[in-house]
Amino acid sequence: MPDQNTHQYFDRFRSSASGTAQFSPDGTKYALYNYFDQLHIYEF
Image (cartoon, rainbow, N blue to C red):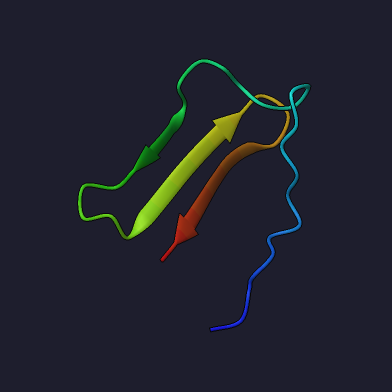
C-alpha cells in the first residue's frame, strides 16, 4: 500500500501534552485532539 498523508502537521506549538490521543478498543481507529485543530479521527 502506498504512503498516505493527511497534510496535518503537529509540532510542539500545536500539540497537546494532556494525553488526548487514543486508539479505539478494537484498534481500527485513532482519535487525536488538540486545541488548534480540534478532533481528528483516523481509520486503519
